[in-house]
Image (cartoon, rainbow, N blue to C red):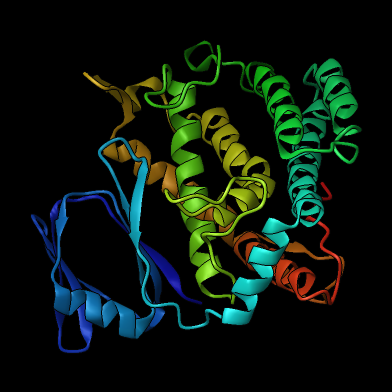
Length: 330
């Protein structure tokens, strides 16, 4: 199984013959190329063209994050699986209003139903969430009857607003009050964790897209534009509640992350390196967790579920099988 490598220190990423190594203040650390699928760079890291050529040859993606843990960009090697036919199918489904709306609705349906599953999980453990679940279900009922992407995104925004209000009841820690969703910069500790986790989710999904015939630049819920990848944002909506949010709830309930793991500077709050490492470890553990899949004989990991979701999307685009989002069963 190929792994994700995380680099938090400052230093240099180098190629030596057919191997990779990172040289930082703690010396030289070799990176096994054959076991690496992606490298997440959080520190100040320098590299050269020879290294990039080697990464392309080895089909390893580099994702870069800034000082605050926000995703800033990727070195996305030449797409080895990219298919002109699939790109045309994606474009066709984007340009056809009804085809695009169907997929966008399915992404929101997946997000909404997984949000509901998370809330029900905690409701069954004594948290007072019945009113929130009821409000979200009422909104969720109208997803299929939306007639525009904007109307759909408004409903999705309202669902998330109710959902985030439930975080205080789930977490019950005065240091991690939600207040309101704030992004750049996050206004409190909890928003900092959500933003950091979402960044990890978007890049993980982007790496999985690289291993398919899909083009990450053509999404359906999030508008396709000149600025960024959007398909990874679409697919991540389905998985954020069950991967990112559950990771955050675990970290806080076990006090693995506390307010001491944050610092403030002129731009806002950020998670210190120790907090990032703890978060990343828990996030990776969650991705590696296996569950019984109702359509497969073997158990599958959450990371594998993301890839399976993309394969389902491919089948839909070539009109082999209608796309239905993954819904957690617990």
